[in-house]
Length: 151
Image (cartoon, rainbow, N blue to C red; front, top):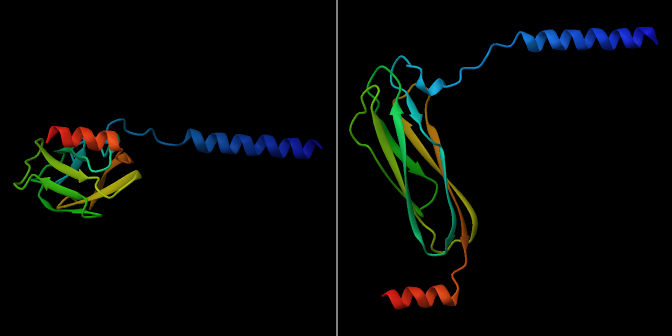
């Protein structure tokens, strides 16, 4: 019995020592200058919340070049034709900001949606993903009547 208790105590001491050896994590790695171009987003996901089927919504993601060389967005890919991207076309100098705007058309879609946008640039860490999220509710006759009355 003493051997079992001693074994558990030794294992706990060993595990505790290994955990204590971990290095502290940086609190804001996106603010550290990287050698070469570096892409850091202020947010990587935007939730539109509840929208009505057929609504067209738009959000602009901002990013910063936290590197030491100009950042160039080569292309921005979307996962479906329901999302249309627009982005900063000129090089973004170190310390400066740029944007990616995502316009989402909810026509023909229902329920929870999460769409990925893939940003390809000359940053050393490769492609980055940003996301738009929405919960699409079915268009009712009352909301259709309001739309007709506006037109």
